[in-house]
Length: 171
Image (cartoon, rainbow, N blue to C red; front, side, top):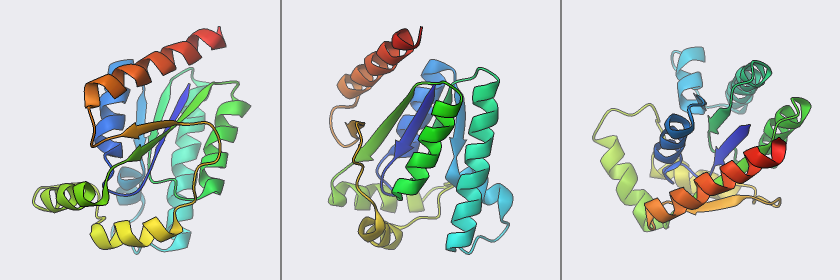
């Protein structure tokens, strides 16, 4: 199974996706980690972004071929990026779930200020959030919306139930 976390920077994707990956014992892939491994000093160009997503999707494809579940963590701000991930799942005859993490802008700003004070793999600040908010392509297909600034445990349990349902459908 392929689980794709997307959303604006600072929306809680990494916290949630890491927790889920650990809970379901899956491979966890994160664009920020891939970026740091590919580029010593990232320039955040479109070419770099394409290479990062391409590498991450190649790793996801490899893991799916090995029978592993995969959790992808990135903004996936373009529809084409999400479609590429979905096609990898389909090409491997795997179920997939798109999860969009959303939070109120004021909450994101506070979270990003806190994150800036501690070591984080993400370099995104609120200016990046504002820029990507303008570039973020809305998700048109069926997906799970996780409001990360709302009651976490209730939503997390609903998410686990959705994943379990998809896994049962696969069999």
